[in-house]
Image 1 (cartoon, helix red, strand yellow):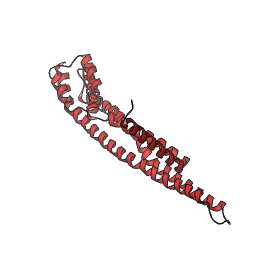
Image 2 (spheres, helix red, strand yellow; image 1 turned 90 degrees about the vertical axis):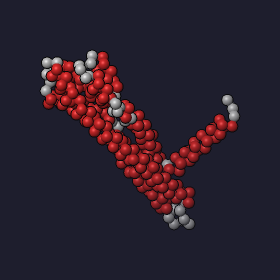
Image 3 (cartoon, helix red, strand yellow; image 1 turned 180 degrees about the horizontal axis):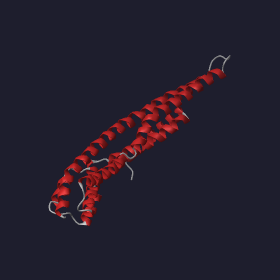
Image 4 (cartoon, one colour; image 1 turned 30 degrees about the horizontal axis):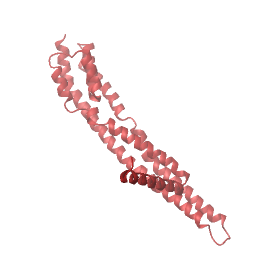
Length: 231
């Protein structure tokens, strides 16, 4: 298929590739770890954006629906399994229902412990990959600083190699300055968004953890009443 739009798109692609190649050539090999960090950070951000959606963690009406379904009795096992597959909150509520089904005379302490265990597992899953993103946010400026130091070494090396001559080679000096500045800038470009997304995801995890705790507190007396009714 030919036309102005595909040709324009191909032109932008070629321009972007040439620009990226020129930056890599100007920045030197120290920028390669930063490029790898940027790719990993982007993948982690996309994965966490999808995994921490409210619909996948704690749907707003799920607790009310579970209370309505279990108003008089515990649901069958297949319904509990479907609830566990619904979301992270559904998995935690299913663990409480299974505890009551397995032990109708369950005490409040044991039921609370079942919810707390499921809640800890849920929060652990919500925090997955956050430490890696935080590590990239902390390490990227240091990698940029390393590239800066390497660029300065090249500058001083070029100056020392031409000592006694008319002057340092301008091309070698320009290359050293490019390595220093490009790596510093790229390290900050990777670190700043990574840190912002890390803080954002940490706040979302805290909010979801609070929602899970509140849901468990709502279900606890209800399940105790169901358990006492089956004795």
